[in-house]
Image (cartoon, rainbow, N blue to C red; front, side, top):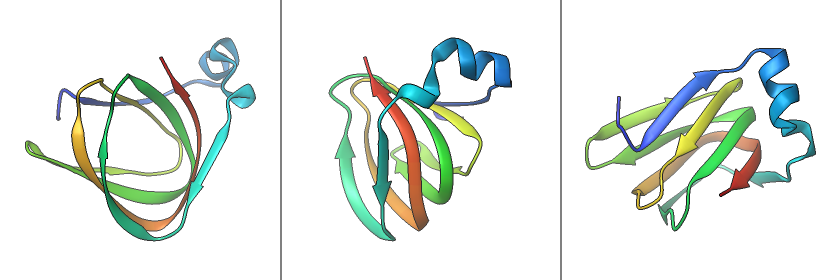
Length: 90
């Protein structure tokens, strides 16, 4: 797996400890766009599906995935199904 993208499954307790339900929500329609991370981002995918393309390969991200995108990552987001996520930059 690409080191710049870490995908985990969180337990309900881990989700409560991180207070994810208080994080802002971001939504995006089916689309394709370039993105660069100036800081780390953590997010929990609530709905939709996206394939994130990096120089090292592609990663498919789906509902229930807790994803960390590392600072410095340059990628292409290919939103296959409208996406909805809680997110936090650090």
